[in-house]
Length: 205
Image 1 (cartoon, rainbow, N blue to C red):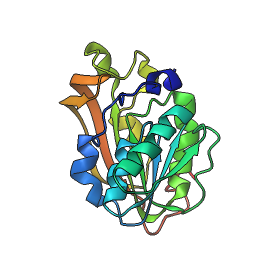
Image 2 (image 1 turned 90 degrees about the horizontal axis):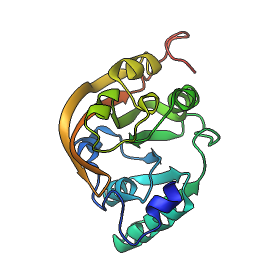
Image 3 (image 1 turned 45 degrees about the vertical axis):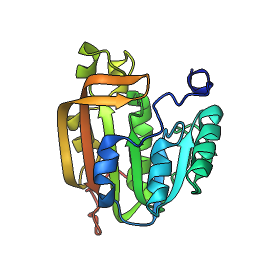
Image 4 (image 1 turned 90 degrees about the vertical axis):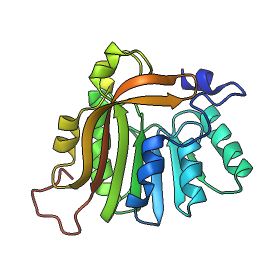
């Protein structure tokens, strides 16, 4: 599906960064950032322009090829890794930031990915996310039709238990990102910092 979606000259979700990321990226400490389900590179390139060392992971080789092209157009470098999130190794305390923008994540994948996020972030590192909520099904302006692949404030609070939330809300907002995300949408937004000191039972590592 994703190779087909990205297999055109146009950028499916545009070349501009996600608005929530563009407004709040400075919450992420300068350093290494992992952008998951990065697609065609718009968010990774944006972060690289501001001095972050960005690794973009996606299951679509076609999307990542376009991400590399976009990086060259902008005079920056990003590392592109073709991998499935379920099997990709996030490492341990490797990242100053992890970014997830509109990444469809069914429950089975959530159960695998969130522990990797917790483990992969450095103490003080920040996880920044914007995702569609199940309420998005009423709008039909992007995000598919699988409520299980969407996200909620309650899920994030549970999966990132022990993190310090600088921002966590479900809102309705206009999302205008290329041909596939256009119109009023129901989203959840989060900025969560991994504590510098973690108690034994605080985090689901």
